[in-house]
Every structure is written in structure tokens, then in C-alpha cells.
Length: 480
Image 1: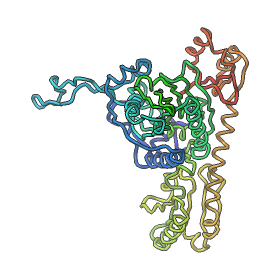
Image 2 (image 1 turned 135 degrees about the vertical axis):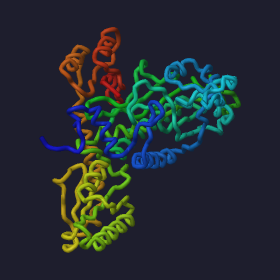
Image 3 (image 1 turned 60 degrees about the vertical axis):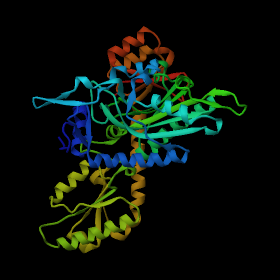
Image 4 (image 1 turned 45 degrees about the vertical axis):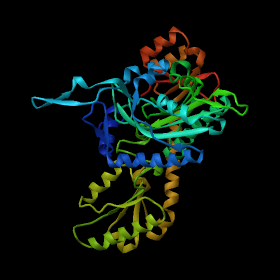
């Protein structure tokens, strides 16, 4: 059997493989806090690139960033019973404001109970709705388009780093409009933006569509989902967009005077994605040697490795590497020289596991020839090519661009190969019984009634979304 850097392989144990990739790439680790993770610098650098590129896109669309408290008064949720019911079992609650030391042990002071408990933010519709009730007074204040980059808390019972944790990072957009059409257009605009961002930045294929009423966000008139496929065929909800109608504006009194001077309730939306996208990158692209990163989100798009044999010509080789590095940085490429004391073979495998898109090697042979060797991470050693330094510098951006396209095309093909369309629930059941792993598309009417509920229970599938380009159909799949 071929030796791989990650064991077990995807085929042997996908779940364990996933955890090992995170460890090998040095992305994150389990935190002392139950169900939480510590995102390590390399993992956070990927998140920062995702954040920066998406933040630029939303600001083009008139969105402003703000920040709201993480602790939300319980009374805010009591105003919105339908909404809180969706999060009640996952809510973490702050009930006391002081600790006390007794006999050298720290414990909660029973006399410091809060008059009103606070819920740690599972989402911010209630808090932002309260703010909008003050900030929106006239039609001139609309549209109001806000976003916050924040952490949220959902007390998950079964956790997995990036995919499902008790605390995670996300962006949540919240907007208010004068008309239902404006709100609908905004919800669709950001659903489509998620789709485009997934394609252009994350290199992931996706299905976008409306959620069925059973999967709808609590309090929304319509919920739209951005669904991607993992290499084990499971679905991953990677973003959502909600048309909330006037539901929250009536609860939190978000009203405005229209052009005629009459008071109306605004129409609101919300949309968001989270660090789940980090998990999507791993399960969509990576292989049995570790992480594969699309160049758009790679902290180091090119890693330059000095190949040394002892101290012979060490300084000369390292100077050549640094000179190349400076040229690449001047081109706007995120480049790094790994001049650590590790053995050359260890450095090579380190950056394979960390998913650096292009790995460059320069040793005495290359120095004498005025060349370098480079390898694409997604293609491996078959892509190894020797070029002059001048030619590589001229070509490197086009190589990165092609790699971005190729990684996306590969995921598109995988998604298509693992998506089937059937006409009846019986056909869907036959596929699942045969061990089919992927997306099954069928008429949504086939998922109504007890028969589908039994199928859900037996095969652990759920309705993912009703694709925009297939009216009347729904996709079902196992999911994370």
C-alpha cells in the first residue's frame, strides 16, 4: 500500500482522518472549555483571509460593520417565543455576577444572583432589533444594512472542530427595509453572494435554494441555504440567508414614517456564515497527505525551501531563496522562506500537510543552473517542473490562478458525480439502502408524510434545500 502522511485515510475512517488533518496542518486544538476549540495562528490566518475578502464584498453593497453585546437580556428572548424555541436547548445562561472564596476554594457567590439572567449570544436578531427600533425613525433611515463579526455560543452536545463547536466565529448581517420586495431582494443578493464567494474564493461547489418549512430559521418567512458536499458525500450547511418579513420588526417595534407621514413596520433580513467554512475547506479539498488550500485563502501561497546538505553553500542558497521571496512579495504574492533548522525532507512534508499551494525547492544543483524546482500541492510530484527564476516569477501568478480553477472544477465534478435525481421516495430509499453517499434530488411532495419521517430516522437524512434551478424539488442527504 502507498504510504500517506495522514492515517487513517479518508476511505478507512473519514471522521478520524478529518481530525488528523487539522492536527497535522496545525489549524486548531480542543480547548479546556467543554465543546470549544482554540484556533491556532495558521488556522486563524486562513479565517482572516476569508473574513477580509468577504468584508470587502459586503462593504461594496453598502453594509456597515458594528458590534453588539454578547450577553442578551432574557427578556428579549421572552418577547420572541418562536425564535428562542429554536435555540432554547443550546443556550448558555449567565445567572451570577460574582465569585467567592471559601476555605481556599472559588465558587459562585449565591448572594450575587442577577435580577435578570443573560443569554450568551446564540444569534443577534433580538439585540439588533432593539437597536434598530431606536436607530430607524424615518424612511430616510432606510435601508439600514449592518453586519458584525463576532463569536456566538450554542451548547452543542456532540462537537467537532470547525464543523460544530459550542463557541464559534461568524459574520451576521442584519438589514431593515421599507418594502417586502427590498427585503426579499437583499436576502437573495446575499444568498447569491455566498454562492459566488464559495466558487471564487473557497473553490467549493454548492447548491443554493430555499429551506422547507421544517428547516426554516425560527421567526423567518423564508430561509435560504448554501449547501456544500464533503468527500464522504455528506452535506454541510455553509451559510444561510433569511427573509424575516415583519416578524421581528413588530416584536421590537422597528417602525418608520413613510413618505406620506404614516407609521409602518420595517421588513428585516439576516444572513451569515461561520468558521464552518474552515471545515468545508478541509472536507471538500484535502487528501490523505493533509490539507489542500485554494490559493485565495492560503496564508502562504508560495513556500520556498532551501535544500541544504550540511553547511556547504548554505549562505549562498539561503540568499537566493530570500531574493526570490522578495520578488514574489513585490508582486503581491504571499510568499515565505522556511529557513528553519529542520531537515529538508521534514520541511517538505510539513508544507505538504499544511496545504501550501506551491512549494519551491532551491539547492546547490538549482543554484548552479540558475533554476528552481516547484510543485503544485493539488497535483503533487507529477507537476514538478524546473524553471529559471525569471520564468518562474513571470509565470507564478498564472499557476496560482489555474490551481484555484482546477480545485474548484474538481469539487464541481465530485458533487455532480455524487448527486442523483429520482422521482419517488421509494427510489430514494433504494439508493440509501445500497449505500449511496451524496445528494438525492426528488420532488418535495415525496418528503411529506410519515414515510419520509421513517426514512429520516432510519438513514439519518434531512431536507437540505429546494434548489433554485429545480422548482418543486428538494435535496436530501446525510449532513454534518
